[in-house]
Length: 131
Image (cartoon, rainbow, N blue to C red):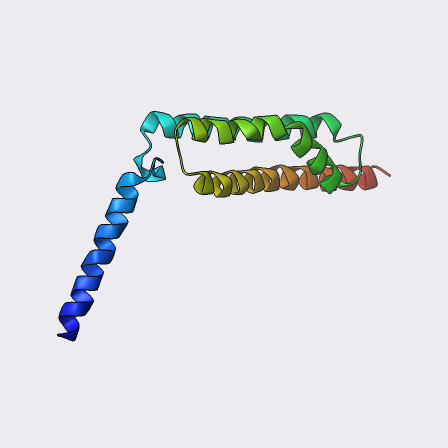
């Protein structure tokens, strides 16, 4: 008897989950087309390129790598907003978009910050070596 109740509750839970998913107005990330994924990836890459470009433009103006990263991220905020828009246009769940945009921002910013720090360290070592 107990097994029957547990099995019935399990079945009802599955049916409820399927019904909720069927009523959902959002596209699941795994259901995005290859074209959609390519568009999202291209937009994230353009954010990374923007960060690299902006950081490179101000490398010699500031000593603090974190300050350079902050400025580059501020200047590229509109490019990051495009990632949000591209995913919203494809009706992806806003909760997923928020997490994805945060993850993408952090990953691209960390890559840029590593390169800035490496440049600063190399530049400092070369300056000391020439003295």
